[in-house]
Length: 164
Image (cartoon, rainbow, N blue to C red):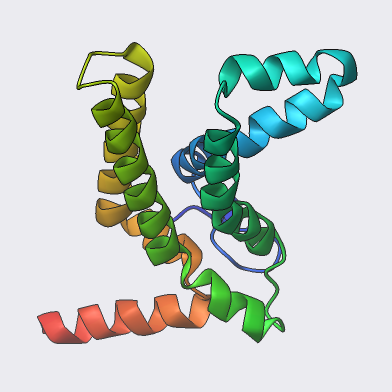
């Protein structure tokens, strides 16, 4: 057995690792700001204007984060009898990589608009996006947690049979 029993949920699915959740929350940061601004009523407009002085950037962030917000919701709906949802969850790794690529391109575009001047915000964003992309590509745990238990067994059996 590759993972401890407490790493599985009550339905037998491997729980998503904390780094995956943190990366997803970073990808939906526009949604987080939007919800916080909405919850703070009187200061909401001020918060949005401070974090997103250009409203277009807020809308782009919301659009790019929407697939990840849906993905975070879908992973919580997994059950053994939900084959359609389980099938959709299998595509969350490539969807996450596409969103990361889109946000990398968007941030690079913003840096270009600033004539390649250094900004801590853009630098940290680029580093975190690159780190998360590397994590998504290299993490076996991400692959296992997004697969259905039968898929994990077939991959493990295939890898075990090919080595002998």
